Length: 376
Image 1 (cartoon, rainbow, N blue to C red):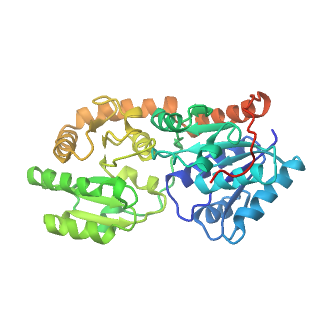
Image 2 (cartoon, helix red, strand yellow):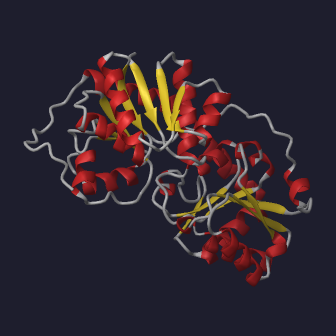
Image 3 (cartoon, rainbow, N blue to C red):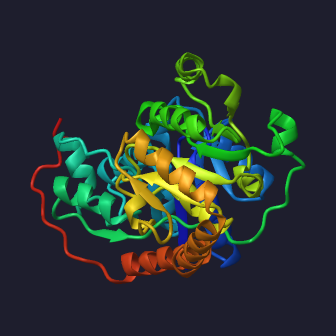
C-alpha cells in the first residue's frame, strides 16, 4: 500500500494523541509505509522516538507553508498517497497542500469532538468533498454534528480502538503513593481539568456518596487550568481528605486494575475512550449522557448513565455498584465482551486501512468550484 502521512500538532498527550500512537503501531505491524508530522518537543515526538515510529518534527515557524509544500512534493514523487489529519491544525496543513500547491493527495480527516463546525466559508470549504475525501467520525453523535454543518461531506463512523494486551505495571502502588486507606474503594475520573469535563459535578457526587458511605476515596487523574479552582471547591465541600488530585499520570492503563470504579461526568464527548479502557480492565463505569457515552453504555447492562450535572443520580449509581459486587461483576463482564467484539485496536486499524483503500481506488466525483480564491 502506498504511504500515509499522519499529522497531529498537539503538544500534550490526550486521548487523540494516544489513538494516533495506537493506530501507527498497528499499521507498522501490517507493513504500512507511514510518517507522522508533529511539533518539536511534543509528547507524540517523544513517543515516536521511544517506540521507533517514523516522524518528522517542526517548529511552528513556517510550518503552515513549508509542510504543505513538502506534502505536495512527496505526493508527486509517489512516496505518499494519503494524508490523515488527526486534529484541526493538521487539517489546515493538508488543505493548504491541495489549495495552494494543487496537490492531488487524498485527504482523510479524523473528527473526534462534538463541537459544532464553524460556519465560516473557509472552514466549510475545508470539510467539503473537494478537499476532504473521507471524514472519519468516532461516533454517530460526531457524524451528526458534521452532517449538520456539511451535509454533502463523506463520513464514515469508525470508533476509537483500545488495546487488550496487558500492560506491564510501572511499579506504582496507588494506595501507597497517595496514602489511601486499604479498606477504601477508589472512585476515579481520568480527564483534563477543563470546563467541559465537569469536575464540579464529580466533586458534588463525591460529597453525596461520602455522606452515606465513608470508606470511599475519590481520585482525579489529569492536569489543567482548573486545578486551583477544583482543589478549593473540594475544600469548601469539606472532602479534601477524601479526594486526591494526581496531576498527569503517564500510562494510566497500568493502574486501572487498582481502581474500583470510573465516574465519568464529562458534559460532551465524541466517544469517551477512557470508558473503553475501564471496560477492558473489567471495572464498572457510571457516566453522563454526553453524546459518545450512550454509544458505549447500555444503561444497566454495560454501565450506568445519568443526565449531565445530575450529582444525585451519579451518587446513587456509584453507591449501588460499590455495595453490590455481584451486579458490578455481571455488568463489567458484559462491558468487556462488548468492547472486545467491537473496539480492539486491530479491528479499528483494519477498518481504517479499508477506508484508505476505498479512498484511493474508488474515487468519487466532486462538484466543480469555479472560484479558487480563499473565501474569508
